[in-house]
Image (tube, rainbow, N blue to C red):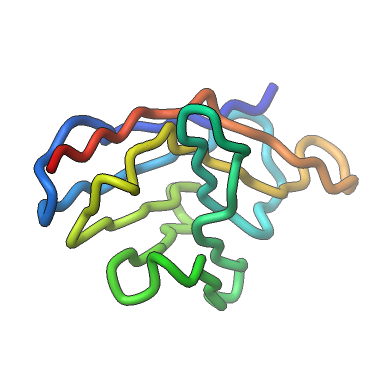
Length: 120
């Protein structure tokens, strides 16, 4: 069974930084795209950033230049470095991975989320 476990959330003042990590474990043949999404209270879940297996990245416009996504394929881990945080970045951040588990059928998995709170 595949699991995604996030860590690194917490509370920080505006202008501060946090680094989120998400480790995938279990029976995994290969991980394709890994991504971060977030959901603020009362809002729908939104895309934040993604990184393909080859390293190509995409970002939500409002985080470009402030957030950096990276991955360690040997550790099946994706990171999100968040700098210059703003109160509007407050949300539960979810890790997402498209991967091949114990067979060659692409499956989408989600972590349980980690809370990021940015105070003004």
